[in-house]
Length: 423
Image (tube, rainbow, N blue to C red; front, side):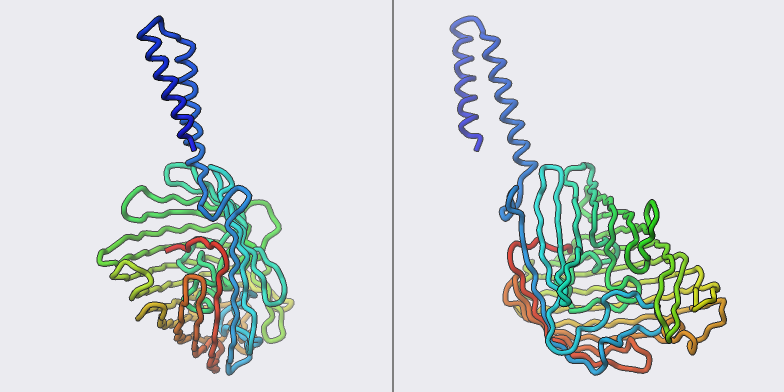
């Protein structure tokens, strides 16, 4: 777009040089040419810094819609779902409802605002005909030094699966550890500062400060941050199409009167909740092509420590717990478009104590010494990068003494331009 301007500059420069050879230099003309050259360079830099993807423009951001639906059958009522031995999160952690159901759909708007900022809005359309803001954030483009600042509401970078949107998961539902310790996933209102080292090896460090609006926090009405986190990731290529990433994260929250009902009695916890997450993922694509034969191994370990006061009805006493959980899953694409996956989940009830003398008979949901497990098998078919159909089978022992046998058929359809997800 600047070629005509450059031609004018070249002609003007040639004229100046010719006049200089013929007569006295024209200082004013040379200054005009220099000013014009500087203006062209400034315009080029501005155009490069504010360049947008082909699907975006100032008045036409990238817009996409994700449609999901399920047909499910389960041997236990999803409405009665609970994870025995663990405080309920209040999140959407139950299995898919029986029969045919519309899943969570997403409406996504994303674009570079200018040469300094990028913004994204993800609105979730629930089966209950409600609209929820899943993400609405800005992200800097040119802070420099490998730093990136993000602000608004966003999926936290802790762990591996947490920042990935649900439609991009390898299984229809979240691992048990995410359900028990994060209510499915952690997204908060706040700020994130991330630094990526300028090295061949991926070195990523970051911190987040947020309101603490969801479990394990309780959305405190106070100034300052109600939750904060740290995360770090390392990764690289091994060779022969193999890549890896490992990480360690920490989340610190201070819930106030985090309440739930157990055996007909209202209980609430006030204190401090600390969560550590270690994650690892290994990907193998020998042909360097994700559409051909490839393999993915993914796992995370969670460990939570809570201490404070437990209100049980009208009485209050000390409460502390140390609980953990983990999952390991693998997905193998054995031929183009077809994948087979297996996931194993386990939670460890650990040690839970209280100063009220309560037993599992008084508070079965919180104090039952049960270690939930689940086995999940899936096979899916990807017609294109915009559509996927999945069959999933699971034997879920989240509830003490009960096995919930689940069969689920899921479809995922993507309309419009949609950005790539993380590694």
